[in-house]
Image (tube, rainbow, N blue to C red; front, side):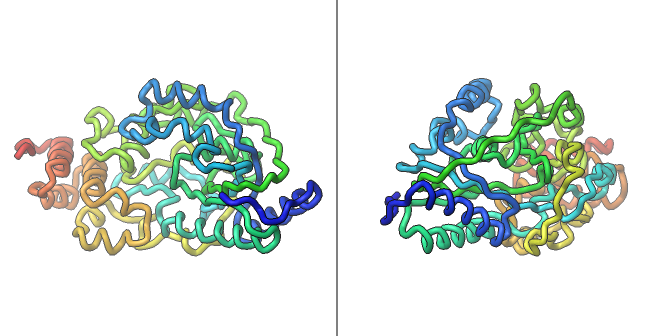
Length: 364
């Protein structure tokens, strides 16, 4: 980072902080807040989580663990972190009903539209440009879920909400349907005060988890989390967890759908977050029969593409195994019984067995 050309006094920095928040709102961010880089209080929790191997195959969590609690080591000379949040919900309704429609594919709300990373990164760059116009050259780096950044901890310290029992950041006025991003900077801006936690005695999120992935309040065993299983895991999904996944094929929203604070959900006006290719109401059989070319075309510009075609089919095969037995379901599964991927074939075999069909093991 490079230091600002002009030394700003305390009054100027205070005004700049207020301006930054205003400019951020004008750029579409729901909230902007500022914090320092001291995350020492979060280190023990992260270290225990990694020591218990709750990160599963996400080796990068352990490999870059120290950087997550040392922002100044990740980006030297960082003094402050400008934290932003952007709402992505398109409805104030938080219904579990779609999870009771076994022929339909459930895709997490955040992934139904265009990939949020580019949109938010562009907005952060515009914010940085605006700051530079006012303060002169300054050091900064933008992050949108793109580096070892403990974003929820930073956002909690900045006062954007509190980390709830479901490990999501919860905002008292907006619930939890929002993205987080950060602008690391060497500007010594005044910091905002954190808020207090308001989960109280509620355990709705812990109780509803289909796979019982929560070890306790604020502690998630990713190895049992459906979001991890359908997005991060690149291997076979553990057999004992497959029946618990229902029709969830990319991510899981249960712990947010049930959260009482999401009655305050804010509806996003961003067109990029609107569902594409009918991914908010698609039939499992329809998606399972997409060719790889169709998958790539329909997920272009989508965060779904990152899991790849084989994992997409793996997830759908599990959901089809959990669906009621019908001719279309069986026909779709048989159509993929000889898929080139051993992993896909294994999950198709399992799905067919769930429907009472005897199949040869997919070992070749």
